[in-house]
Image (cartoon, rainbow, N blue to C red):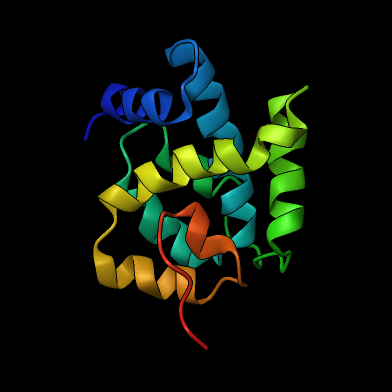
Length: 130
């Protein structure tokens, strides 16, 4: 999938005004995700994304993953998207379900399985049974 195709899917899912708004939301969500997952996982995901998006996942090189939960994830997305904090879950879902289309199932399961409860829904996956 090309960069513009990724943004088109995000725009359609999120019902955004245009590609620029979809790009802004995508940068915000992937930037926060890049801080939440381990550097190796971020690098693996980055290789699957179109040029211009992958580097958003690993901006700080070799740093430890931050251990924040779903509420903090959404708060950080909201802080990056501007005056839209109540739509952070919607925004994250639009981007992460598009990302999930590009990631092989086993790898997606591995990454989501390492995240706390609540993240699976953002990727368009059912929560795993306990």
